Length: 211
Image (cartoon, rainbow, N blue to C red; front, side):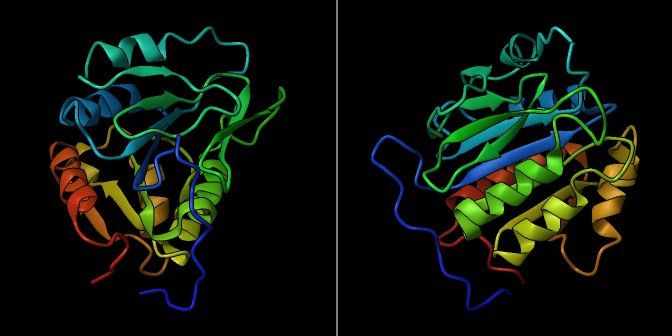
């Protein structure tokens, strides 16, 4: 359990002010993200962010695809938009996605060259800093190690880290990179258990209470 970390100041009235779930993935993550979102109710009391690696010049239809698999409203993230409970914001191509201290989203051009784009690390680090124990990082299928540093930041500031297990990850690199770090992952579960786990975390009295 992380202690001695100051919580950010209160969010404005038009922002979530509560749990924020960030679902990050790469190769194999489209189907996995859809499975997670399909298990979440329309009245979810948490804001949701979905990030999947894609080329900057890629024309993304990810919001439309995911929107057909969930009861939650899904849209591409916009610069400056508030994080609201029960809504899903999808990282667009060509931009890194950050969470600000005011619980709003910020887009920053990613450029044409690696590292991974959009960056799961940048999103999760900013999420951990912005919401502390109310942050929930979900690392799904993907190649490489993007997200491991960000997951460590979420853990450092009292949030919760979830990864899928090897058996249900098409590519286990990204979850494994988190698991390989020293005790930063709270839950390693099969893909079909991620959504029920999220519901339990969203409704518990205080997020980030590591066992």
